Image (cartoon, rainbow, N blue to C red; front, top):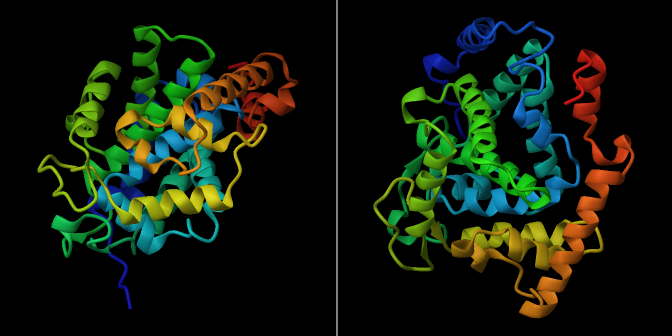
Length: 313
């Protein structure tokens, strides 16, 4: 039977409370606002419900290409039986951290830490052959940063499909991401300084990704795509639908970083058909983002935040 591992000292309940309080107090934020002030870029990006479809697969395939993350999902997640439910849990965590009060932010992070106590084991050959038998455990800073970076990168990617962002806007969005990372206890010393540095950090890893039975690159985290990663992505697409119009395969193809497109659905349409479906998807998504009633285009978490604080963004 798995024995829960105690969290490091900086992830105890008291340490989480103290860190979130310090971040908020230093920024002059009231408890009602949570981690961010009025008009925070990350809130403006995360508020659009239709963008979840654009960002979800983009984030997931990058996350699971990390063997530690992929093995943890295989061993401890219900992606095979309830992929949509698993994605929903991730969404609830992000909503709490982005839109919650200070107390809700603390509670969300504590649940995150507690929920990962038993996420440990050994990497198998199906995940990464030359790392088979390697022990993995939760709370490793590099892996936690990779997971968060993939989410923030996906959010920015999705927003850019609606309208181009300036480098200043991207930097502000990543600055908010750094704030979440610090709240989670990820050391500031390993956080990319701005969005360009984040992209460089991620691109270096993506450029070193290996496949199948090939040995993984020594860079840490060494990205590798093998049976386990395909199993996770196949389960997602077999059990979850991606609205509107059921264009899941084409959307997956165009939202997935090129080095990882081997994880896209096997029945992706021919290039011309996929391109037409992708344009149709973008047009439908933009129509919802720009013209739909607030109750449809905005997430429940954002609407609750706006009602609570009066912040229109």
